[in-house]
Amino acid sequence: DLDALSGGEKSLVSLAALFALIAVSPPPFLVLDEIDAALDEENARRFAELIKEFSKQTQFIIVTHNRATMEAADVLYGVTLGEDGVSRVLSLKLA
Image (cartoon, rainbow, N blue to C red; front, top):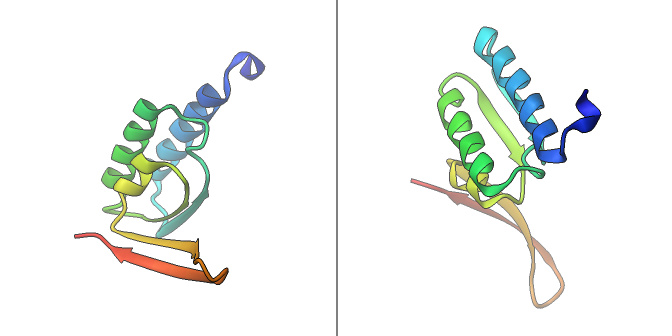
């Protein structure tokens, strides 16, 4: 029963189903919003490894606060609030 699973376990089940679908029929791009929020650090690293592997065939746009997921990115975009109270958009291309 899915109700017996923790939040992280439910996330892992949904990620397994998602990556199984991607493996069979890869979309050109995929938008994921906080899909890794309930994962612990080790499972977040595993998720990041899957993103790296599947990014050869699918472009991922991921909204996240998870450090392990951000480390897997080629480009990061973010919004920060300056001392003057004005929001700024940042972009960082990782080599």
